[in-house]
Image (cartoon, rainbow, N blue to C red; front, side, top):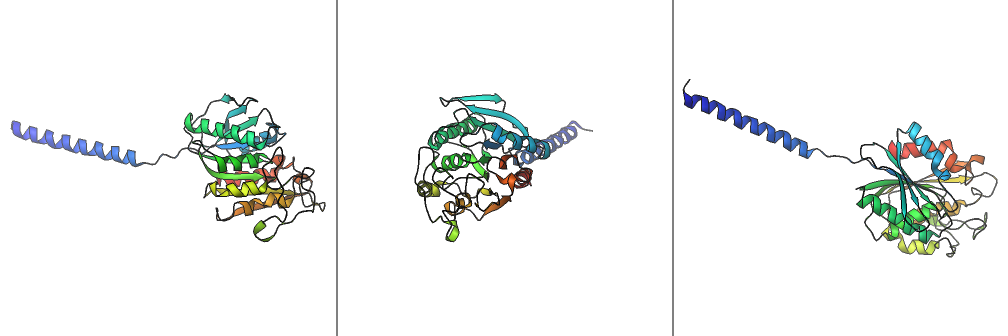
Length: 281
C-alpha cells in the first residue's frame, strides 16, 4: 500500500477515536450526580442526646442509615464536632445537641443557624432533612424563617410534639384552647422567656421555604386532656395554620395511648416506622 493510503487510514482512525472519546466525555458530564441528603436531629428544651438516640438507632437498623457526625453546641455557641462528614454515605445522620438545654429558643435558633451554616459552607451540604422533638421544632422553624446566612435547603421536616402555641403548665392548660377554621387557635398565647409567641411566628411565616414536605406527629394520651401530657393537640396542630398556603399539605399523624406521652414519643416504635417511611420511601 502506498504511503498516502496508510496516512489516510491513520487519519480516519484518529478522527474516530477522538469522536468516541468526546462522546463518552459528554455523556459522563451530562450524568446528574445526586448528593445524599443528611437528616439532622434536634432535641427540645431540657432535652439531650437521649431525646433522639433511640430514633437514630432505629433508623440505622431499619432504614439503612448511618450516623456520621454529632455536633455538640457548647454553652458559648462554639461547635464541637465528633465524627467526619462522608458524602459517600447514602443516608447520613447528624445529631445536634445543645449543651445548654435551657437556653431560649432565640438563642438556640442562633446556634442552629451557625450549625447549618457550617454544614453548607465547610461540608458543602446543599440540602437536608430534619427531625425535631418538642421545642426543637420551634427552633428549627424559626431558624428557617429568620435565616440570614447561607444554609442548606430544607427538603423534609418531621415534627414530633411541637408546642407551637403553648405548653401545659406554662401558659396553656388541657381543654382550655381550641382550634377554629383551618386550625387557627382561638387563644393566641404571648411570648415568654423561652418561646416566641404564635403571633410572632405568624409574622415570619412567609419566610419559611416553600415545597418542604412535612410530617406532623402528635400525641393523645386518651385520658380526656387531648394532649400528650405536656402539649395540647391545639398547640401541636396549630402548625397547619401557621404554614397554610406554603405547602400542598401537612400530613398529621396522631399517636394514642400511654406511649403517646410527650417524652415517650421519641421512643415509640410506631413513630420510628413513620419516620423511615416518610423520609426514605
